[in-house]
Image 1: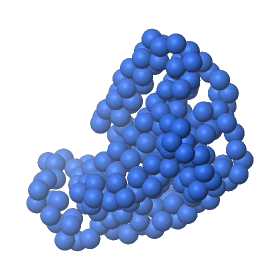
Image 2: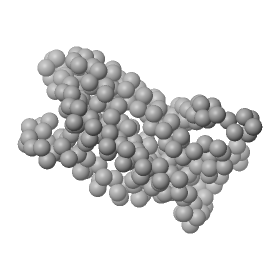
Image 3: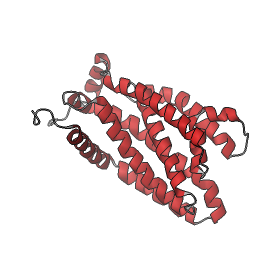
Length: 246
């Protein structure tokens, strides 16, 4: 019975190994490392006061890039290559697949964020990394929800600005000094950016967690639904399956 129904831990470990190989093959680790190294080099070239001003922008850019670019691309690639259909034949639950992927990207964000924060002076590092983790999980699950059952990136590219704009726009307004009003904190990213600046707000963290819970519910429901047959057929015609699909 155990051989037929592997434990949750073994399923999660197998999913993690699969995603790590996929990230390496697609250059996710390399791209993140190169971009982070460039940002660290730039920060080290400017005065310390300027580093602390720039660091939240750098961190937010890196985190949102991982969430809003890599997550949709990986989902669509899996559907085009038939990986998603193959995984649906296994005992791996959609929630487990979602949790492993978002978890790995969050760990990657934390590693990059730690390097950037240390280059900026390491001020209140624990609060900064907590903000990195919260924003990373939030953007990742929102990106999954925005992709939905799309078989290509086109629907996400059309929806993306309407999703990212209301989330990121209010967060940048107080940072650049344009306005300071409680209405801006309707976006959970605003309090997240405060944490990237080393300012801990427990109410803001609770608001972020509430958004994450809602986004996880929507994203899990999205990954449970199969890709529409017509869209899947279009993808297969445009991109044939490999000779050895195993």
